[in-house]
Figure 1 (cartoon, one colour):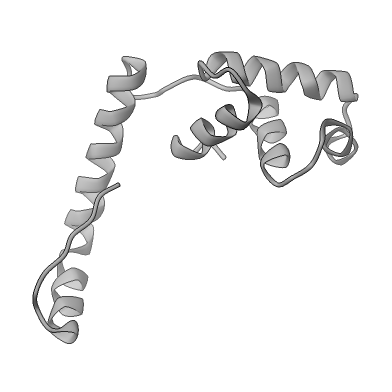
Figure 2: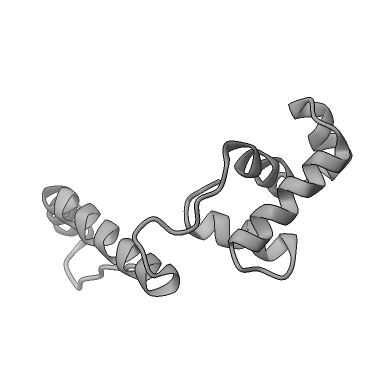
Length: 108
């Protein structure tokens, strides 16, 4: 998390932030890339397939494997395999952890 604060009044602070928005976005992006590099050794993080991301996405939204399978028109077994593969690539023990990591990495 990246946070910027000040003791300026609200209106002056808003103008200051608006004027520095692009720089703050660049700083946040650089910090994010550095954190990913420290965790995964590269800027890119783990490479998940589109289907792995899609299965994580629907699971993160509360769908079980059967419901996710219906939505993306795969078998339930295939959805579970994609979730296991994503979990492994993200270095997680549970699907919930994988969803958390994928969310932190902005994959879903």
